Length: 269
Image 1 (cartoon, helix red, strand yellow):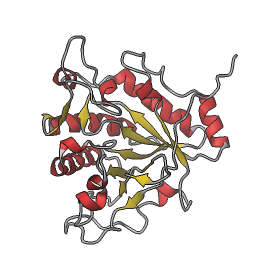
Image 2 (tube, helix red, strand yellow):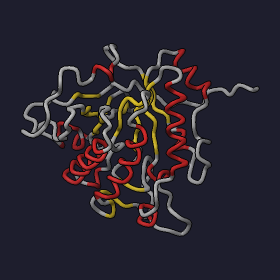
Image 3 (cartoon, rainbow, N blue to C red):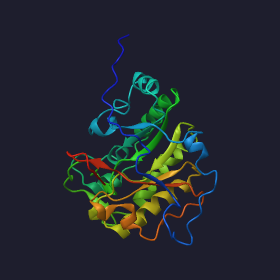
């Protein structure tokens, strides 16, 4: 059998820029305090986690057969040999609910969850776990559909402007409901790099909707909640000056900031 070389793995240390809930001053009164042991299982005794982002499902394109974009076992064997113990798996919303030929974004959101594609995600989580690597399951859309990473896709809809609470509840109930009992799932990333055009208040509300949907399934893994993709306006300290806003009965919220180095090495959110 020919051994496949691991595909290009676009990575960063996953803990860079991550802030645990409760670190910022003045959270909402109804925000659950972080239990002392809230992140023991998540950290698994380590002071930090070393990980990479995996974009095979994003780069695989629409229409690919479920599972084709999964990383092979050899990729995870290689990552484990390099000390990686966690990956963030980008899952495109538009692959979970596929826009029919000639249809609109709203037609896509009206489709049932593609169970074959969901099976492929579960299979990849298990492949990673077979090498001791846990997975952060990332809905890789910025509170937008089908627009995810990259330039805006014409005809896309946004949270509060085409995307309803029911749409977010549907996709996250399906994902978390299927994955909640998988030991290889480390956390859920509610939205990837929410778009500034969504609006601060709308995004914060829909992030809560996503967390509520995840918890409604009985899933207890931590949830990642990100700042908005923008300049300093979108950073967590700017959009939530009063501190943590997500209400999670388990207290397991990780507020995550994305940082990018420019040509001079300076870091911007």
